[in-house]
Every structure is written in structure tokens, then in C-alpha cells.
Image 1 (cartoon, rainbow over the protein chains, first blue to last red):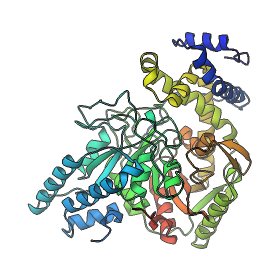
Image 2 (image 1 turned 45 degrees about the vertical axis):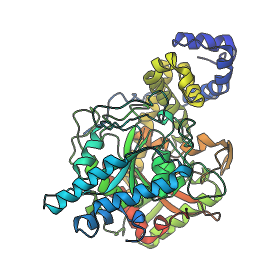
Image 3 (image 1 turned 180 degrees about the vertical axis):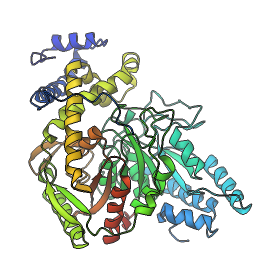
Image 4 (image 1 turned 30 degrees about the horizontal axis):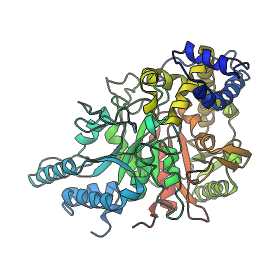
Length: 61
Length: 471
């Protein structure tokens, strides 16, 4: 999801791709939260992790 | 004994073992207090009156017949209502699971029973553990016991666990912590809560929020009681692939009170700088007290902290939605609307976001490891604010405005990402009489040193011995 995800139709399509059918009212309810989340997720792209391998295993000993 | 409900688990275990008090009396005192106070406090979802009294009578019979007793023999405790309990409903704080009665105990439920502990009830919580304020529209909002005039947040998601222990309705409880859900209510309610290292305690039979971030641990009124409970709970479990095969030490043996030479890193930027002035001053004062007792205190900054929020959102949002997706499709109307909104927002997190979150997780873990390579523990506030009123939405922090939800999780999520152990203790009180929590963070699987620092602090202060005035 990118910055264009601020209109209801885009949000509705995104929900449908995840298997949810939301009403206009339900989409409107989550829009502020989704927008705030998008900002936080986009900020992740500035993290210096280009050479960092993601954690994929439990660190058990 | 007067005020038996304020006795610690350690004291109760000793008194029961020496037959100074009957387990039946101990359990009855707590059940009576629940009956008197919990209509207002709303810390319990289910009270196990009859089963607890039956277990107490059996414990007394064992004791009288000279059978060997466990370290928690006859000591009551309560569980956040997401731990499976055979024959006792386990709701996860939800309406959807309101009638769910597990057939088997969670691993830790079973281990505590084997240690002799007596379950007296299941505790209120945020629905499915998804929220830090401690609110629950289905079972009522647990009330912070430290303010009788204003209804303040208990903190969550283990809200009932914090309130019950703070109010003397249980000497100890278990919570779970995905983004601070043990340490936030411990901070706001003025108790001691330990998030162990990821992998130290089994999550088998505990309803998940986000598998890779969930930790389970004790919430009590002292570090010594956390040590007692952790010893009984911890260790490898074949039912949880994430558990470690490392031996479980006697955590109580590390509680020497000696912190001469203990290296304490005071977390300045993001942590102290982000707290309200009153919280910041409280933790700085505590650091000076520790230094005067022989600890070697320096300041440390963690550069990766600004990325923690996005990484936590990517990981928790994805995993939580994956777990609840089917329920959300078929029973959306039965969710707390706020929880449903948060879960739905997870649908917009991409696979790339999730992987990026896991990369940041590695970054954070390695940076915390480096900070602890030259120190024994790190010290920071547990929450930047004391308990806000339940209708508060915005707060002013040391570095600017924040919504309450983000503020509450801010200092906790780094150590859910990294998996390091962290113990929240009462560090002081505000001028208005509200508890201020601070946390000691240690190396992986070194809960012994974390508890040693927390216990030493509690020998130097009396904040953990103060109780709210109730009833």
C-alpha cells in the first residue's frame, strides 16, 4: 500500500485483497489509523538495514 | 494475621509451610476481599471460589499428612484470562470466546499447580490483549486503585493482573507482554512485573496476540516474588518450539542486595528525554540512589529507537490479523469495535513491510546487545506518563505531544522486538500520589541480574510496599 491509499476505493480494494468486505462506514472508521500506520511503515524505509538479514529464527539456546 | 491480603507470596509460602497459617484461611481472605472490592475495581472476569477452596483444603491435608510441599504450596494467585485452564472458561477478554472452556491447562498453569500454587480466578484484560490502556467494553474497564476520585487507566493489556495485585485481591498474577502488557499495568498500578527473555517461559496454551513478540511472566508486589514465580514457571517445553533448553537457575539466590560495581546504563535519548518531567526526575533520582549504593551508572543512547514503532506495527499488525482473520470475517460485530479497527488496519501491511520490520528487529537486538556488552543492566522509565484518566487521548511528553496509546507502549516495545528481559518496579510517586514505574533491562537469559538489580532497588526504597487506600 502506498501514499495513494487515502481514498475510500483504494482502501476498500486493499481490504478485499486481504479477504474483508468493508462498508463505506467501516473504511472511513479505519482510514485515520491506516494513514498513521502508512507513515510509520514508510519511515521504516529510512532504517539503515540494507545489509541486515531479517530475523527469521527464534534465538533459542 | 491482620491484613493477610498484603502478605507477599514469599511470606505466604513460608507461613503455610511452617503451619503458621492455613491455606484455607489465606484463600478465604483473598476471596472475601474480591467479593468486597471487585464490583468497583473489575479486575476479575471469573472467580474460582469453590475450586480454590477445595484446592486449599487439599493443600492443608497434604501439609498435615507430612507430604512434600512445593515452593508455592497453598499460595493463591490469579491468571490473565488468556491462559488455558482445564474446566475453567478462558475468554481472552472477548465476547467471542465467552463460553470457551479449555480441556487442558497451559503449560505454566500446570507448572504453577505442581509448585503448589492455588488458582483463585481469571483476570480482566484488553480483548485479545490488543491495547495498552486496559479498557474492556465486555467485562468493564478495570479501575486503577490509586485514585478513588478519578477513573484512571489500569494499563494493559494485563489490566486485571495489575489491579488485582495492587489492590490486594491476589498476591501475584501472570500477565502477557507483546508491547508492554506486563510492564505498562505494573507501572501504572505500582507493582513489580517481569517480562522474561523470549524463550524463557512457555507460551503453550496461552492465546497469542503476535507469536514472535509474545512473552509471558509474573506480576507481583516485589522482585523476590517475581523470582519465586519465575523459577516455578520457566524452562524448556516441548509444546513451545521457542523455549530454551538452558537450565533454570534459582533466581532467588541472586537477590543478595549487593550492587557494588553493578554497571547500570541510564537510557537518555528517546527514553528519559521522552518522559514527562516528573517521571524523568523520578528515574534520575533512582539512578543517583543506585550509584550511592555502589552501582556504576553511565548514560547510553540507542540510535535505532525511532524505527521501533514502525517495526512493531509491521510485525504485530500482521501476526495479529493472521491469527484473528477468520473470526474477523465471520464475527466482526462481536469484537470490541476499537480492537476490530486495529486488526483491520493490519490488512494494509505488506510482506515487504513485515520483512523490513524483521530487519529492524535485528538492528535493535544487536544494538541492545552491544549496550549490554559493557553494562549489566539498562535503566529507563517503564512508561513516560503515570496513569491517565480513562478518557484521555493526548498527552504532552518531554519531546512533544503524543497520543496516549503510543506513549504507553513507547518504552516497552524495543524489548519485545529484541527479546531482552525487563522488570518494571515502582520507582516513586508523583506529587498527586500516582505510581511511577521504571524498568531494568538485562542480557538474554540473565533474569537473575535483572531481578538482583530490581530487588536491590527495593531494599533501598519503600515504594513497592505502599498500598492504595480502598474500601
